[in-house]
Length: 303
Image (tube, rainbow, N blue to C red):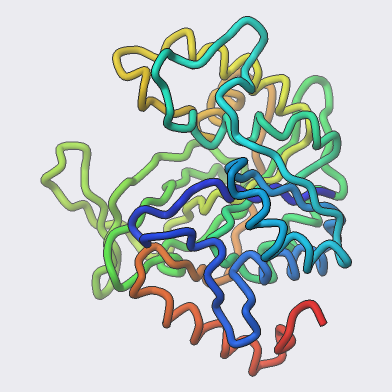
């Protein structure tokens, strides 16, 4: 099984390349803890999606030290990696979105694979559930059986500002029905609230609401569907060709609605930790310190 890690973003609100910011005295990054958990869950290859100019930085700081434990490869989200016959809109410099990022690993990944963000701590249970699904996931009668790990919203919030989360609607059979992107969610005393589309109204949302943290499991059939979806996105990019993005949740939603896949949602009790804002760093360090003290992780992950 392969773990694909989205690591091309710079983290504008955080103010730097937060994926490579040490979170403990041993110099480990959040990525280290995710890869450590993934290995425990049976993953045997990791593919980093990065900016090409950051290749040596990633190789020197993280790639080389984990290469003795797991196979490591790199992919670049490049504008010319597109369906046959297509080119990026003229003048476009902004990446084409997370679905395009996944499309860019199609030549490296031929097996079932998981997807995570580089700057999110997901917890051991997340990878165990992801691994169990991917070990047996397949495509039957033209329907690919994907999965998503669903977090309780209250376990994914920061005290230091708003966050963006995908609010999920899940059917009684545990199959994902929809993901609605909420771009501004803030924590309140007994619940959270998101800013409605009018940009003025805050709507309460319970802490136990299932949300997506961009942790997915896919069979390789998704690449063919992303090829068609990306072509359709470029054909209908509309009035904002320099900024419109093809997001992974939107791509999965399109595929579900067309009947070529389903997505099983596995709820987790894991608590997310991340560094959306600089003020979050000390909280993350304290949380990881507590997990190390409790024996869940060794003091030095790769010794």
